[in-house]
Image 1 (cartoon, rainbow, N blue to C red):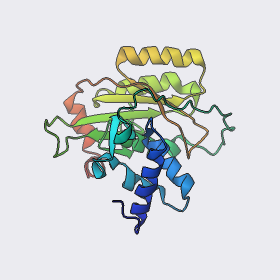
Image 2: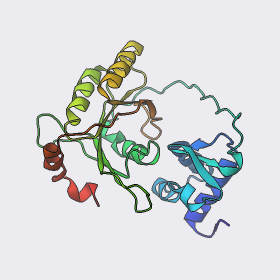
Image 3: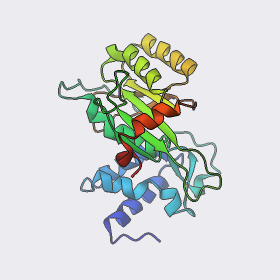
Image 4: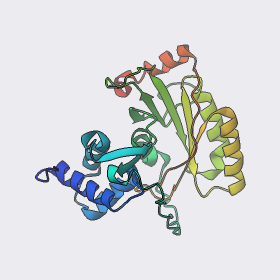
Length: 254
C-alpha cells in the first residue's frame, strides 16, 4: 500500500498512476516530467529522490524491462504493445543566454537514472584537471552495490557537452582524450546538427568506442537526451586515472 500522507508518498502514488496508463512503460525522465505536470508544486529534486529506485521500492509492482525504463509487472506479458510515437514539435529559437554548463546537472542525472552508466555523476567543466588535454563537463563513477552478487571494478565515465554544432570535431577530439583516464567516454551534441555531420560522428564514435548522445540545446528544462551509440568500455591508464581523481575525490566518491 502506498502512503500518501507525505510528499514522497504522494509522488510515488502519482508515479504508479502514470505507469498504470503506460502499458509499454515509461522512461525515468518522462515519468519525472509527467509527475510535474500533475503537480507543479513538487520540487524536481524531491521527485528524483522518490522515483529513481521505484523497482526496488515496489518489487511486487514495478520492474525495469530495459535501462532507465519503468513498467508495471502486470504488463510484463503484453509484448504486443508498442511505444507511443514521439510528437514532433518545432523547436524554439535558442536563447543567447543558454550556456553549456546549464546542461551539466541534467546530463549527470541522465547518466545515473536513465542510462544507468553511473552510480554517481557530478558537474565538472572548467580547468579543474589543470591539463591542456581538457577537463570533462561531467564525470561519474559506476560502483558495485552491496546487493550485487558479482562485484566489479569501479568504472569512470566522462562526457563532453557541446551546444554549438560547429564544435563537433572539437568535442570528438576531447572525448577521445578523456579515454586516457576513463573507462567510457561520451559526446553530447545538438540534435539539430547537420545530418551528414551526425552520421559521420556516429560512425566515428562506433569505430573509436565513444558514446554519442543527441539533445535539444534550446531547452534547458527538457533537453530530451537521446542515445545514438553507447560507449564501449576499455581500460584507461591508471596513472592518469589516479592523477585526475585525486583532484575531485571528495565530490565524486562521497
